[in-house]
Length: 140
Image (cartoon, rainbow, N blue to C red):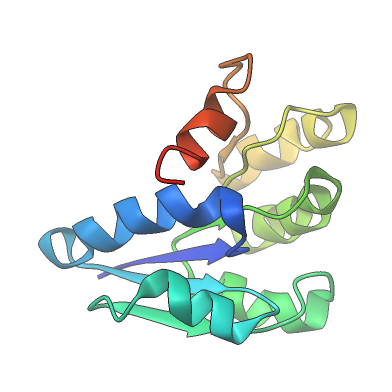
């Protein structure tokens, strides 16, 4: 069973979480939605099979690392300023990472370590202006 960790259950995560929960059983995936607000994470999974809500402080390495270790792939839906530390941990732990943020020079500096560890980090794909925000709001 593939294990997916989504960090951040805020408004921009809604469409992603809904999409993933619809595919969990048919793809034999397990999903963990992590947010500092456990009730929000529970609300987002809406009782979906193979999904669970968890809470930890994603800004603290000692709290996030056990959850990163669990995952096959990590999706950080936190604000862009917090992606770099998560990315560094993912590279060290050999975990693939997806973020909706643009590639910064600090993130670009991880490229050689990513290659050496067989890890990919997928950042914003340049679909502007704001298609990601429009899709996140399509049900509101």
